[in-house]
Structures are given as C-alpha cells and as structure tokens.
Amino acid sequence: MSLAGRVALVTGAGTGIGQGVALMLAERGAKVALGYHSSDEGAKDTLRRIEELGGEAMLVRANVAIRTEIEAMAQAAAERFGGLGILVNNAALQLNYNFDHDDDTYDRQINVNLKGYWQCIQAVVPYMKEKGFGRIVNISSVHGKRPTDFDTVYAMTKGAIKMLTRESAIELAKYGITVNAIEPGAIRVGRQGTKETKPFVPPELAERAREERRDLRWKFPLGRVGLPSDVASLVCYIASDETEFLTGAAIRLDGGSMLL
Image (cartoon, rainbow, N blue to C red; front, side, top):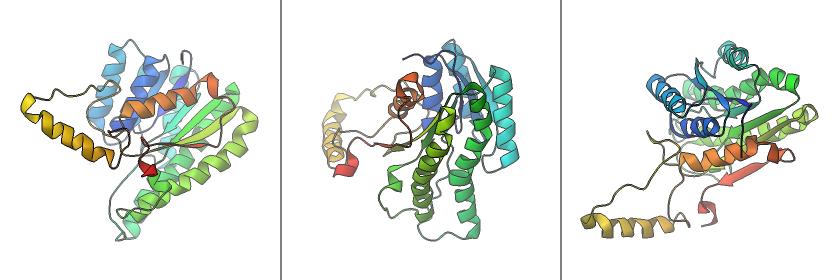
C-alpha cells in the first residue's frame, strides 16, 4: 500500500502513537510534517529515523490549543511539500484527574483534545480543497465509548471526537475529503516506534511471562496490549486510495478488550 506523492501532517509526532504513525507513513512513501509542542527530543528522534529510512520529513512546532500556531504549522507544511493531503489529529492531553478538575485543567484538556482537533481540521481543509483530495484521521479512544473511573473530562473529549468526525465527514464529503476516527484501547507507548519486537525473556523469567500473558487474556483476548504500529497500519490504510468510500466511521482498535 503505497502513499508515494502524499503529504501528511501528524500532530503529537514526537512520542507514542504519533511517532509510530509518522514513521509508517514515511515508510509507505508519504512526506511527513512532524507536529510537536513539548517533545523536542522525541520529535528530533522521529525526524532522524525517517531520514535513516530514506524518507522526507520536517519539524513544525505548534501548540494545538492556539489557532495561529496551528495555521502557521499547516502553512509551513504545505509550502515545504507543495500541499497537504493527510491530517492525523493525534496530539492529546491526559491529566487523569478523576472528577476533580478545576476550570483551568478542564479548559486545557478541552482546548487540546477537542478544540485542537477542530481547529487543525479547519487549517488543513483549504489545502485539501485545492487538490480535491483529503484524508483526515482523528485518533480518539475506547474511553469515548464506555465510561471509566480515571478522567471524566478526558473521556468527554474522546466522546465528542466521534461527533466531530461524523459532522465533518458530512460537510467535507463534497470536496473529496473523508474524515474517520480510530478508537485505540491500551497502547504500549515509549521510545519504540513502528518496529517493536518482543523483548528477550531470560529462562528464569519465562514462567512469570506466561503467567502475565494468562492475566492479560482476562482483559485482552489477543493476549497483549496494542502497539503504535497497530494504530499506524490502520492510519495508513485509511489514508490510502483504497478507502475512498469510508467516511464518518469510528473504528475500535483494542484487541477485543471491550468484548470482555
């Protein structure tokens, strides 16, 4: 599945899911603008790894809670690569404050997780209209589907992303722009990117590892949590020409954990 000739903007590309998505988009041939805010070292690492692959990328620093910075980010990417065809809304804030948010923490999380997605869409749409093509992928969460007990406001933002996706899909369809959401479950994030490998397990730890896998199956039928590469593979599929009839969808990607 080649994405050669496409230009992608990925927010939150310095860590975790965003880094994994950016790397795989580059592997598939896309030119990638790496949006980041505070993860300077991580973003530089993503850029280095893409260049080692022979790909093309650029760093663009922006706070997705600030419209002017978002617009400057989109403009810089479009000018450098000659347009924009793919947006991956990924940058998010998770404070884990239960119900104990104050006005400041509420506003911070809403402005990044929801308003930021909306404003990023607004910023890239003019460039997509010029080409008559666009793929917008909103990274949401299974926490937008079912209640949890760890962060009410975070779950609220993820639930709202589903309606943002649906409404945007209706409004932008006439321009050849599709809008879809991915709802990951637990994802192992860290310094690894799209090429995670199973760690070596010394013999003395083998039984413990088997016990942990049995424990995982109580929550994850496939026996493991997700990896950034799992999300990245789905993003690349949605971003391709093969999904021109897919829009307004929210795809759960949790290894079946919601079934238990």
